[in-house]
Length: 394
Ligand SMILES: NC(=O)c1ccc[n+]([C@@H]2O[C@H](COP(=O)([O-])OP(=O)(O)OC[C@H]3O[C@@H](n4cnc5c(N)ncnc54)[C@H](O)[C@@H]3O)[C@@H](O)[C@H]2O)c1
Image 1: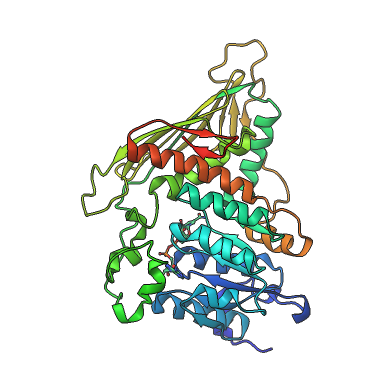
Image 2: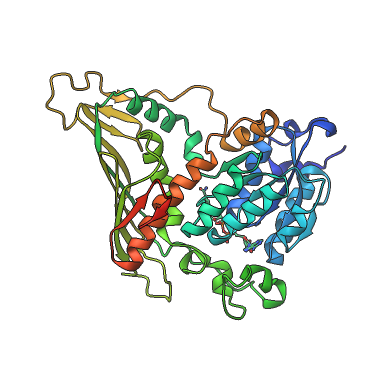
């Protein structure tokens, strides 16, 4: 195999190491080729696990062709291109798929992929509709496939160390968590000038009728703003952070959720909130998560225990807030966990070993339960409960 200097520059330094014997190669199909897929492509290269992307599916020609060109350069072979993900799943020469399509599509594509015998890296959120999430979770549980959910904070060495500190009782019993994230921009607005109806397989995008109406460039490119394609901040952001609660507290399902929010500033036709706050109650712990797109106050992620406080964003422990004699005695940075492989490297290695990846399907279902509870509460104005025996929202 020979490579031009330009191709090497385009894909970065991980490229040569990503190669390996063809008979040991993991053949990947990429479903959805937008912003997040570009990150996943780089992650595949950086992982150096002898994985090649051999197929690219996207309903929009512009993203599909741009990604295919990068893939062709990186792996010295043009990928199969399609607008229909089912065509990739039918291929025997694809071992696994990476799903990076809009939120609403994840559970159906995941369930179809495991039924077709593919291993799957599925972007977060696991689901934005409870029934869809339960269906996909059961489909994966009934399969032998390896599934990594794209909540990559599970592979963050700082957060792994924080999880260990909290679970070992470093700050005593944690009964309150406060998470706040703020960005001052009309986030998710896109340039629509290059979106033409003839370049889009609109029927495939409509996803069996889940997305309604004639061609609409905003629905395709600004899907984050519309209720048919996402449940808003619950799926776009809360899922990453509430995943930490299930993980650190070792408690998979919340008991209750109550949410308020709305479009307070960006009155541009969007349906999903630009200001949002939810209260999610776990066993003996109340978690609040707030987000606004209207102010740039940044991010805070505070875990309050009887013996002190952990700032998970800064990876720091302190005795702040504790009056107990056995409160934290050594405040300061929490050392990061050593030797943590990337989220993608973890997935690719698990394909070979058949181990469960770090963000398992159970973790994905957990964050989907919390996210769907929070979103349902926002829509109905009511407190939403979860029944962990019947596995139903109430
Ligand atoms: N893990 C993270 O940190 C992270 C960060 C950003 C986005 N995400 C998630 O990744 C997913 C993709 O987000 P994005 O920012 O890349 O969006 P995007 O709009 O940039 O890309 C989505 C792509 O999917 C294509 N698409 C739409 N429907 C399709 C279908 N049915 N079949 C095939 N292709 C289809 C679109 O044409 C587009 O190219 C979302 O679920 C998002 O929540 C995760």
